[in-house]
Length: 408
Ligand code: HEM
Image (cartoon, rainbow, N blue to C red; front, side, top):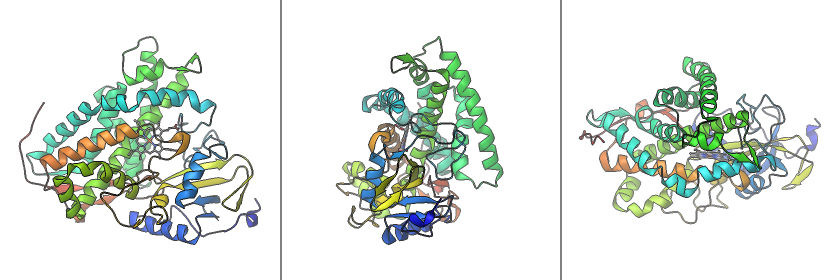
């Protein structure tokens, strides 16, 4: 491959660190040494870690392509995981355009706002399930079920599917690859695909007015969507909607446990929620990296990139760049402006960001209103085993003053 032309070179393996703190430190070292560099690890790839460079690469889809080059392997993870094709994330224009338009309408600010009462309902129901006991495991009893319920109910999947679906996505990220939980998650993904196929087929000639029907009856560039692409878009929407919002909520609840001064300010000054949400996204971005493939030879930030080279863009590192964020390593609850890249940038920027913020707010408000004195049992906290692509927490056991259920 002529690696010698790919300079500067760094010794950086994104999978080498196991904790958030270690992974953040590794990114700080990479960015400080060189914001754009080549690493020989994981098949050899470019690493882009400076804020300006990450933003520019996200926006330049003509050079930094998201399209699959190997049909069996994902293009947007550096490991090339074996996910089904993600639509529209793994398409470039012009193919990307029609599918994105469908999702952008389904997840517009107005459409997302209509789901707020459902997010509130599920947050209240989950807290009802724990509040009398005065203790609960926040990830499995609240943080994780709420975004799953909101997304799967909106799409139109029956409640009997929710646990299998949500565990398939969450456990694949939350457990190490040699555990029974991980293997069960991998097996469950096959069930998810089977159920997606069944529900897409059931709506083919029956518009039920739900999210799945909107996908199944969509027109893409003047033609009815194919069944295969409807299934892939559904899979992408479930994957996008389920584990990312929960990772953000876990981060925020742990942060407020560790920083009582921030909890007190949010309780006293609810107007701080908007800037605080953006700061949680900057400091704890649930999607930490995305990969791309160079479409044609180019020079980027002085580096010679060749067609076919793989590239890793770092949302986490971009948010920690002191040239873009003063006091970048401090959580500043009222930081403004805050142009973080946690939702990406450019054409693939997350269309689910409105729904993500709404669901996050509803869960956080319900917690601070009903169990404001919650305390996380530090010794029992479990982080995700790897922070290379998605970050989050597998377990956050908590205690709080018991209270009454609210019911419906
Ligand atoms: C805090 C929560 C979330 C975060 C941090 C997040 C992050 C991201 C990021 C960084 C991208 C860009 C990926 C790339 O450039 O390759 C993205 C794309 C996407 N997200 Fe999200 N996301 C979140 C929630 C959601 C939700 C709730 C949904 C849907 C229900 C969703 C659906 C999607 C879809 C469909 C795309 C692909 C868009 C395209 O390719 O045009 N996301 N997300």
